[in-house]
Length: 262
Image (cartoon, rainbow, N blue to C red; front, side, top):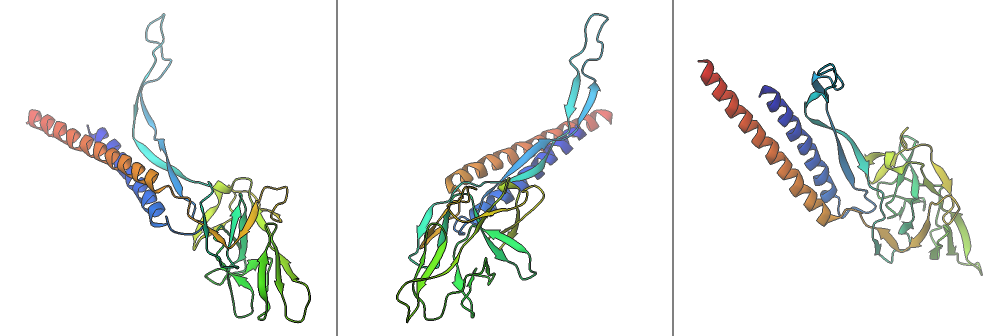
């Protein structure tokens, strides 16, 4: 009965972490380029009362008697499905149609990766994120440029006064990973490379590495399935309540045993 108390408590703790994950997904349902996460569980160690395969008689072997000791959280899976496209008509906004990531430079000089294509200009005319992190490779828009165009293949052009043709200002590169689900979330719509993700593979949009193409004047919405998250929230609540009920029942049984001892 005491074992049941701790086992059920582990289930309550795991469902609390599950609810925390669901809450974060729902909180970011309107965050551009956000990738939802799904919590994964695993069972804990088992008490071998009778080891499987032990001899029950001279002719038979026991199938064993093992009692589980609960559950725990093992990992969070990053869901990489494509979010819906939201048209903004802002010429500096870009959405990736595919599996790639924009590359940006962090204040400490390291690279980070994002699906949020809401870009702005800093005081030098360079394309930066909302937090001021410069796009890599750097793209600078002259202050008098008009008719800024970003092709599906990442070529940035603009009309410069005094020139008869549009000037090419640079080419945007995207990055992809062998296991994008292994990226580390940094907050601020940013991800970092990790040993689980593997090394980044950079390519121009539309290349053969599968980074995808760009859509100018769009941003990618969060890929959170709000209805699905509410369903998962109800399931988490029911599982939490079930484990709580086990604790109450085990406590009641333990109280009855104590009464018999007296």
